[in-house]
Image (cartoon, protein in one colour):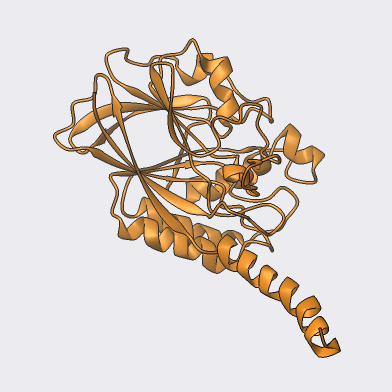
Length: 278
Ligand SMILES: [Fe+2]
């Protein structure tokens, strides 16, 4: 090998590899998934758009979040559900810009949200983030998005009625199942919004049929043959996609943004769930 070829390889390969990883980390895929809930009888399947882990921060370009919202809005879903980590704990974000983006969701469909570990609370404070959820509460509420902080609500979608229950974040030690499920109508199907899919274990005894989560980023770095060693969950069976858990379903989206700047073998996604009766 000539000296020129050697230096070409030495300098070019990392540059090409970095460009590939950057492009992979910023190319959003649309994932269409289906599940069926007992007790639900919609005239047509409900189209629920699940967004998570936008992680507005210097390592997540604004344009990535804008494109995710462009694509989500273009799909004209019946409702939006957002499952936390709107920011990255110690990173700054532009409140006005973020509000203008999130308002585009609530302008076309009812929108509901819970918080993630990065959004504020004991975990976020330990990592340089907000001690409270006040800033993110303000952002979401002023964007027309209804928060479900250990609370529930009845929604009508595609001509059917169902319940949404939301809990606080597991790592923030904010999960309160009793409050989240208080007063639910047992005759209506219930969808649980919980940032971290590990939350399922402590909410086992509550009446939900489908849980929507993020947090994993799908593992963020997925190594063929090795899996996702960095996935921040105990149960690695639920890193992405819609999967059964006993008689119930869990949907985990890989989310939009990331922490640290790069994804590998695990693209950002928006997820459109088609939910029908069982
Ligand atoms: Fe996250």
